[in-house]
Length: 272
Ligand code: NDP
Figure 1 (spheres, rainbow, N blue to C red):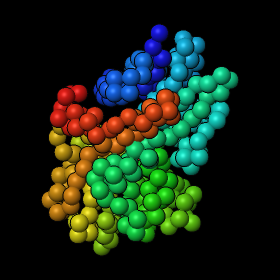
Figure 2 (cartoon, rainbow, N blue to C red):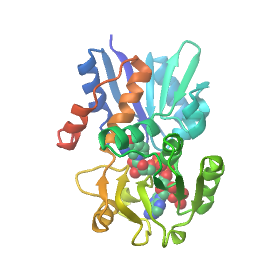
Figure 3 (tube, rainbow, N blue to C red):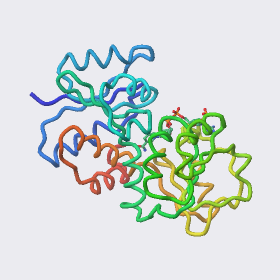
């Protein structure tokens, strides 16, 4: 019988994760079944328990349950502790191991796939939700000169930045970005899902800067369109999606799949 894994969230119908993991399984010769698990908004723990009782080996966790997964895990990786959010659960005898692969996936896509070293860069991270929390420790580990977190609800950005203040992290509202420039600007907000653009001032992008939107899709997001108009290089989150999935696959199976062909297929629209 195949080892069972799933993506748990609400909603989950739109996700490419089952197709990506099916590709990884084919590539590595591992016998896994990976499905979507729609959990009621007030029923995360019960849905996890049921999946585990049915022999489930692990879960990917998406909106809005990453904090619930952090609370549910009985053992956590250092990066999950730093992010205080979990997107990967692994079930073992008597324990639920929680990890966060979002940050590693983002940084690998930026540095390895896009060839953009983060060291000594001025980084702007937009958003202070689950995705930003996962991204922040991984970005800081690459030793940028600064990471500024901008968020609509400024108090959330300040709370997040406070924990990483000693590593050169600070927070502000969008209205405080005028006359500032960044080399790497990561959109970790969900504004793109609603077709919206956070209120960014012009001249935010330094020469040769990279604008990265964690959102992915057929059309460029409002943020990526704005960045292009401002002369920045742009990338959407499809590479991060595959890289964080590969990192989860490694956590579960101990094998790292080759991500390049899977990213190429995703970008070619083969999974749409
Ligand atoms: P959350 O709901 O946890 O956080 C949403 C964030 O977006 C908050 O900071 C919120 O600000 C901000 N926001 C929402 N609407 C607007 C707006 N109109 N203008 C400015 N800010 C806004 O979501 P997640 O952090 O989990 O996800 C964020 C994005 O990252 C999603 O698009 C998701 O699909 C993507 N993602 C992609 C991944 C990938 O592999 N490519 C992996 C994980 C996430 P406030 O605090 O003020 O509400």
